[in-house]
Length: 330
Image 1 (tube, rainbow, N blue to C red):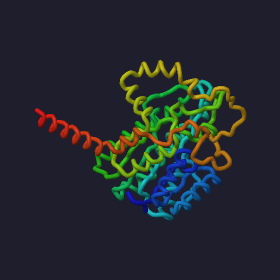
Image 2: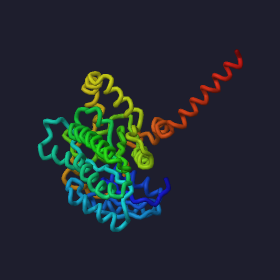
Image 3: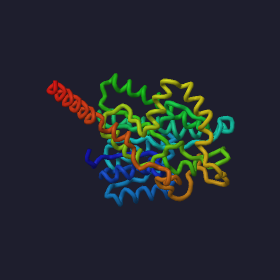
């Protein structure tokens, strides 16, 4: 789809959100940037303007419903009706559940899960009356399969998926043309592993194989243009989701054995580090984390997902041609 839309992105300053902002900016869209860090908001705003788009920086804590509602109102006042709303904001705590305080778990839930709830409510209030618009939930394979050391994040993504499914039923009941879609992501090279709270002894890292945030951003932008219920990104997401449906007990045993080491950088003690759990970190973290040398810039699986109809037609044509040639030989 061509540019010219109004897109609101939560968690717009870092990681997947920052890459999503850049992707929509290249399309010529006007973008509302919702995040807490003012310096990082300015950096994201400059990204949009360099790409030729319009940007509105809105300092917002998505855990506070009134702030999200105010941001949606300011977006429409300045840029026009919101066409696409992207629920992306997140924070978490890496570590075992019993090491996480009640305040920490609550805060991660309020940002990651309730932030998506409040964003959806602000968007739906406007989209439903116009009977158009798309809300994209940035999900994870961990919406289907919880893993150790990430109970707050996994719980939030499971809750988000349940919320998403309930709302799709309600919108279908009313015959609404507003579209909800959820993009399920693999491990990504984002700054969250440097500034999310951790209780682990070593530096956190995404579970390999790791993908660049631009892979996720392309999937989010594509999902905003197509009426797919869900989009899986990366082969690891596919086998994690499908494998858990087939044999959850096997996934549980495998993760209990491997997922402690695979989520920590061997020989890299955490030491002193900033945490964005209760306040934004200083500076402008950008889209990428520290794992550029390990991260894949493309996902063949995503290409197949995006082109499955054409590939299916090609396969059918090939099968028909093969059948025709076989018949002629006979």
